Every structure is written in C-alpha cells, then in structure tokens.
Image (cartoon, rainbow, N blue to C red; front, side, top):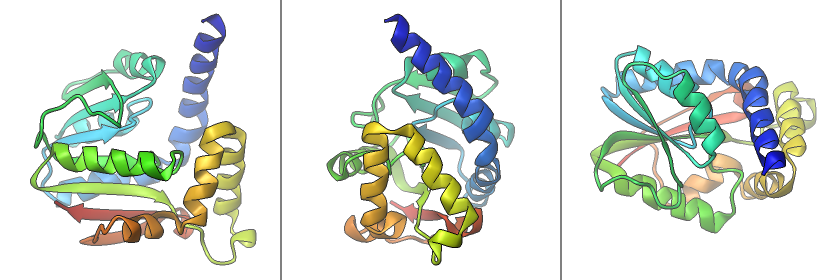
Length: 208
C-alpha cells in the first residue's frame, strides 16, 4: 500500500510540474471552444489534477471531473473552487444519469487504453450527453516528417517513460491512425476539427 501511495503521489507531482504546463495552450483552446458552443455543464473524463475543470469554471461553466485515481481526485479537491466538482469513478461506467451534461471531454484520455476499452468509454460519454450535446476529443495524430518534429519526439519520450499498458496503448493508438483513425472506426463525424502542438495533437468536436 505504501508503494502505491508513493507512486500515485509522484504521479500527481509529475502531472502538475510537467504535463499541465505542456498542455496549457490546449486547455485554453478547449475553454474557448466550450464558450463558442454555449456549453454550461461539462464533464471532464479522466480529469487528473482538475486543471481543465478549474479553467472552465473560471470561464463561467459548471465543471465536473471524473477520475479513477483517488490520489488525483484528492489533489484536485484540495484546489477546488466554485462550480467545480470531482468524483472518483471509472470512464467504463460513468456514475451519472443519461443526458446529464452539455459536453463531455476526452483530453489525452483514450490513447492509453485498448480499442475495446476506448469503445466502452465513448459509449458511456455519449450516454451521459444531453440531446444535441457535444463530445470533444483531443488526442494524438502522428505528424508528417515525425522524426524531425520536435513536439512529436517529446510526446514519444513522455509516453515511453509512462511504460507498461499506457505505452502499449499509445503505440496501438498511433498505429491505428491516431485521432483521425479513431473517429473513422467509430463513425464519429466532427462538426469542427483543429490541431495543437504543431499538428501532433488533433481536436475534434462531435454533436450528439
């Protein structure tokens, strides 16, 4: 148990020091997207440290984060603010009623899983969306000239350091065409697409 707690506490520190700053520009774009879509209640699936929820709340939205890591949930709650709520739960079986949210976010939450798990996560997200709600996904797309792409090489290093099932999921995700491949396989038709991190990250918005 002590080793697990240490590992999780270290993961929180790494996320705050390394990951959150790296994806800060993407988080700002997600906030702008949600405002443009007139979203009021948002579910951030695999919300980690709660950084995205806090940004959404500061922009006037009600943000709920669901996260499997209890240590991450505790860390997010310690920095809790107005209009933010964090729940310990699984993306495979979201603890919410059908049609509970205007938007569901998957920010780098799908690539680390198996394809079957991704399918389950997508179905659950669509279930808790309200009619005409928005599914917003940001995840990796392998860029052209990847060997010369600085951001992509940094991403590959971070994912390799994650190791285990996480890295295996990343390699599978990329081999299947990244975000573009995921959308095609699951018949998700975007109403809006853009990119971040010099094209290494794709952003897609689908309306239910």
